[in-house]
Length: 105
Image (spheres, helix red, strand yellow):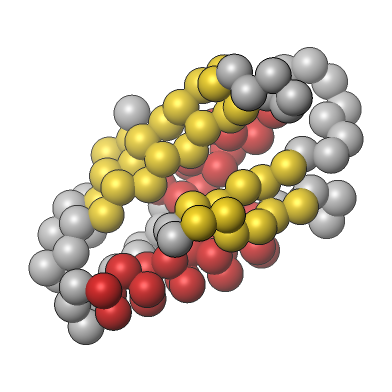
C-alpha cells in the first residue's frame, strides 16, 4: 500500500483505536478526511479535559504499525478546544517516521 491507500488504511486503524480508547459516555465522530472529534460529555473536574488530551496523545504515541508500509510518515495532532467558544486550549503532535519512531511534542 502506498499513497491514498496507505492513508486510508492508517485512518481506519486510528479510528478503531480511538473508538476503543474513549470512555463509554464520550462521543467520537469522524469530522473530515483523517479528522476526528471526541466530545467529553461529563468531565468530572476542571483539569480532566487536559488530562484526557495528554492521555490520548500518550496512547496514540504507543501505537505500533500505524502504517502498512515503511515508506510512510504520519503526523497525528491532538488538540483540546472549548465549546461553545472554540478556543484552542492545547495541542500535541505525534510524528511517526519511516522507521516507526514516535516523537510527541
